[in-house]
Image 1 (cartoon, rainbow, N blue to C red):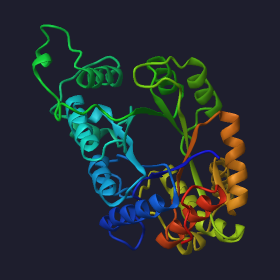
Image 2 (cartoon, helix red, strand yellow; image 1 turned 45 degrees about the vertical axis):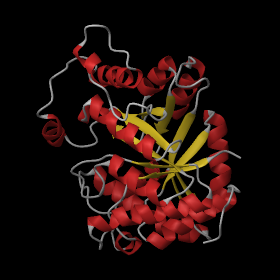
Image 3 (cartoon, rainbow, N blue to C red; image 1 turned 60 degrees about the vertical axis):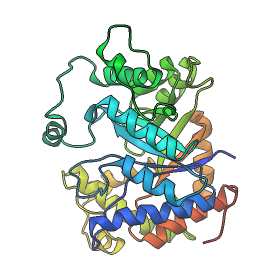
Amino acid sequence: MIPLSVLDLSFVRSGFPPSAALRDSIDLARHCDALGFSRYWLAEHHNLPSVASPAPEIMIGQIAAVTSRIRVGSGGVMLPNHAPLMVAERFRMLEGLFPGRIDLGLGRAPGTDGVTAVALRRHQEERGGDEFLERLQELILWDTGGFPEGHPFRRVTAMPSDVRLPPIFLLGSSGYSARLSAQIGMGFAFAHHFATHDVQDAMLAYRSGFVPSQWRERPHAILAVSAVTAETAEEAERLASSQDLSWLRRESGEFGPLPSPEEAAAVRYTDWDRQRIQRNRARMFVGTPDRVRDRLLEFARSTQADEIMITSAIHDQAARRRSYTLLAEAFSLPRALAA
């Protein structure tokens, strides 16, 4: 059956301090490692009261150190925020410490608002043009040592020098990253959980346009989705109400902590609110494990996904762990354990 992975945004929960979300991530990663999930990716966001982790490379090291088999990576590092040399050094270090278990997912967006993006980059040189593509090309050169003769960077070594970068995936919510990933022969991950672009267009364009490269002989497309499961459909709906309210608030510019189901139940929604929630629900997978599994498998077939990556915005940590347990059992993941 298709591999399952995890995308963890380190959601801050209402009623809990932001630092608790970091410990929740480590706890969930240990749990999913035992359950047989393939990857555990951490995101980069800045100046968001709803997301606790702005530094996925730090979380990657912490999680890789307390797990044994699951691959750990970034979903992703927002490359325009960072000097490519820094990214090369940090991920070579991670690969050196945890060989064969690290992934480097790269994003084009800043992962924040415009003012914070300026604060992140205020001492960086203005590049102009397609900044992401230029930084990606430089990152590749740091990995391959391919700076031409006479280039000043040719004398600089990204350490540790005996380690190559881990597998690179380009992240996207449109067709641009899909086409770029295909052209340069890298992995691709599509963010269906928030994308408005047609998922089949991006996923199929990546596969049809893929060119084998030194990084990857065959295409590998990851489909990231939002899913919530519970023993009953009613309980899954109750748990998903937190994400419904959170999404509605974000649409209005409110980026507060993830509300509880009790907070969501106390809200008096307008008919317009309910319509907006239902539109967002169309891209979510909510229900019993078997129902969610069947829908996900059909979605993976229609998009030709090689892997499904699941993010679950569930307020109760025990319920979030249980949701991943039920999915692992429904998909018969190797080494799945009851929890």
